[in-house]
View 1 (cartoon, rainbow, N blue to C red):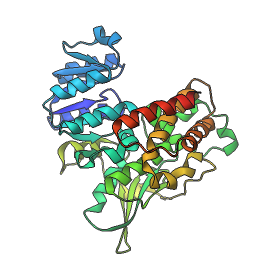
View 2 (tube, one colour):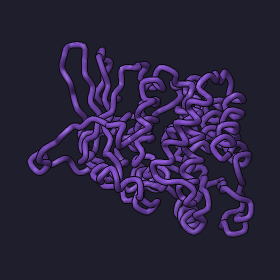
View 3 (tube, rainbow, N blue to C red):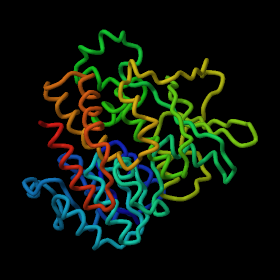
View 4 (tube, rainbow, N blue to C red):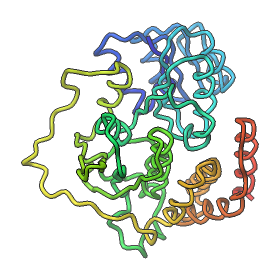
Length: 356
């Protein structure tokens, strides 16, 4: 039995497919404003509780027990008996549910990477199982062996093959044309700027307790992670582009049946690894500093979310988003949040700075 936060997004939909396959009951569903899909999920899963983003939509939901907003999610979590919470909420909104779930002693199957980015130094990661192809790949490879270095891969996003001059004129719609993955708007934009991969490095730091992490571009999204071991060998994790595999392991702990169609080695062709260049991905210039000062993740996340809003509404260019994040990062680089309350205050201050 599980609680699913973010049920109408791509991770949520895939989670419900895995839950159905393995007869896992859904105690509660939490969604944003896609009420039509939520109602379909309610009919299929028959959850005990439901929560949505806005109380204004409550009358549209076909369920007798509907909670609203952040406080509603917290109350729902306190009522649920499920020991596993799948957090697939998007952005900063996922932080408090992660914190509250851990307080309640629940295990968090985490697709909301912002929780670790913003407050990784304040969270007990022993309660967290990542739902992410890259971190799942690393976990799959490690098997308690001593490592030298970890690698995650990036597709390069929508503009990886564009002329640099053309990127300046790219529209929001252009940035959503991801070459290999089908994801929500925010994570697709973050892929185009490489912010998503910056976040994944921070996640890996907290999950695997190392700073020796790198990201490289692998355009086919076949190789998801690599581990370089003390013995000098390097092992790669390959899988088709589908999130059902990490979800299945997160929900069941171990899986012994086929979840994905195996890779056809002979059809792959050439696999190439390329560096992430700051000329195309300006945000990458803070990578090393951020890994050494991971408490600054709250700045990057808050500034990035506001920058995406500005880009979407036409108030800045695609590259202007990175300028906004880098400006905020420099302005707030001396902060040191020591509590979740500090995180909330800094988050608000950074957003006001970016908006101003």
